[in-house]
Length: 205
Ligand code: ADP
Image 1: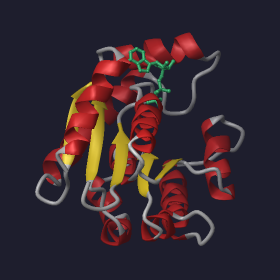
Image 2 (image 1 turned 180 degrees about the vertical axis):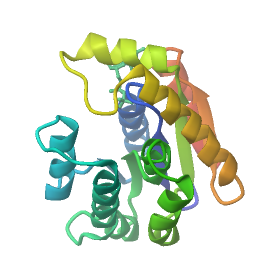
Image 3 (image 1 turned 180 degrees about the horizontal axis):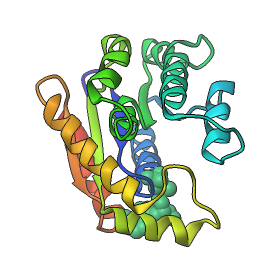
């Protein structure tokens, strides 16, 4: 590996992002790399606010949610304690479970995608992923996995919404294919097989 990489995992809920982020982190650590694994929404106070909206503890609206995600992302990048930019500077390979493509896909169900992309442009300018890995599953499989694992569903977790979100991911990938490095992998296989695919792709970078 030439330099420390910034890798973002994307996909609809339950696609296996956190499973794969963990497997990749373990693999790279084993190979002797410095790895910092992180996620959005973050565990900051802004991230907590978002989680409370998701859990329907706080009433909100889609524009406020989009703005909260953006604030959380700036904090994620810029905070001095464990911000992504600091970690990159320190030589860590950073793996994040969700980044700005999640905003493009989820918020654009309710507002123009161009607006969401424009609002996130400073993040893209500060740090573009060396690779965005999209784990592809159907909304039906997503809902089955969510319902199997949890007693309640969160705000975005309905079959109709996830169908729109998935379509938005592909729309965003197509829109930004010149600027972004995107790797789509089939999430319907065994986690180990998906992990092998991802590791092979990363080795190629
Ligand atoms: P996400 O972070 O994308 O929401 P998770 O990694 O938390 O997804 O996985 C959601 C659920 O699906 C978990 O119960 C996990 O064990 C399971 N899971 C993850 N990857 C796979 C897979 N490839 N096949 C079947 N189930 C999976």
